[in-house]
Amino acid sequence: MANVRNEARPLSPHLSIWKWGPSMAVSITHRVTGSGMATVGTILFVWWLVALASGPAAYAAFLDLFTVKSGALNIAGYVFGIGLTLSFFQHMSSGIRHLFLDQGANFELKANKTTATLTYVAAVLLTAAFWAYIIWGKTNG
Amino acid sequence: MGNGTSIGKVRGLGSAHEGAHHWWHQRLTAGANLILTLWFVLSIALLPAYDFETARHWIAQTQVAVPLILLVLTTFYHFRLGLQVVIEDYQHDETHIVLMVLLNFFTLAAGTTAIFSILKIAFTAGAAL
Image (cartoon, rainbow over all chains, first blue to last red; front, top):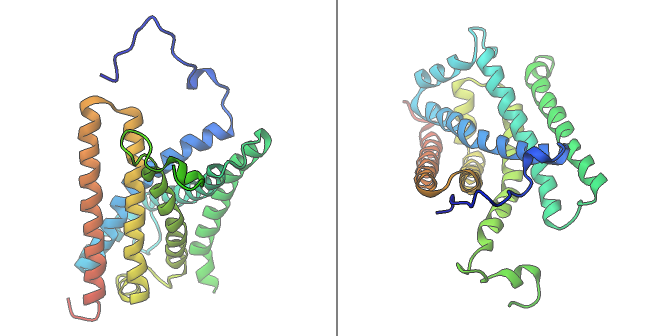
């Protein structure tokens, strides 16, 4: 079916032949972050809602996976928490850039490369701001 | 051929007569997601605490439960469209069909569970468990 290919025919140039740049990296990162949130993010989000709907014991069991006794996050809490928020802000920044590309805008080489890099900068800054507020913002306020 | 707008020119073309709807729904839900997920992430950050009672009373409010259900609808539809493209790009033949069936089951099962949980919280938060 779709996989049958004449081995004598050359393949079109693919990933291995191009020099990597920010635009390619953002494209595959968009897919990876989207797939990650769709699977891991969905399962944790639904689990959180089910635990809240089920009662204090179920919610305590959910929180216990991601926190230490004092209520602060444990390693798993930080890995999933930062992983998912970084994925979210990256997918969002990259998605906004994509909406401009859909209009036929921002295909000039330099601007395209700059905005690709900017999605990473924005994602890291927004994730840092989110966690800085969660960890330090409340104790002082 | 439509009245000359760019979307009108492609509407109804192609063997399935509906090729643009996947692309368009992905964008439509992207716009809705942008508003709803930003609201959700900001609200989570601004919650005074993350214990059982605080989280439950937050969700139980109408102005939270309704946008949260909308968020489930738009994000789950968006990821279903997105994962479809990932499956179509990397899997072919029988595997493609099996994964698409599983994707549809997963999206609907997870979405229904999420919405049921939100409604259950909203309708019972004031009552004794």
